[in-house]
Image (cartoon, rainbow, N blue to C red; front, side):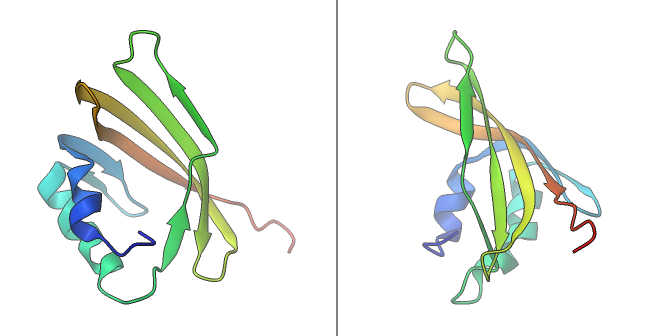
Length: 107
């Protein structure tokens, strides 16, 4: 997202990916890409994320990445979890993605 590379983002989506959005569940690469396209249209990224933890099955076929999501000002707003599948040697695609809002309890 920081590089503002929508095409690059799209290459990581499995054709059968499922993304859990805040108001709906998106199914398939085309639907997810269409929903995320607007995040790449402005020069500045509206949010950023980075993995804080990555775990890969011993078989090397599935992986989980999870970490913080920050708004454009750097404030922690959520955490994400993505399940990745290795579809060919060195080729990984997201098959599930879900974010969870961070509680701003009492602040």
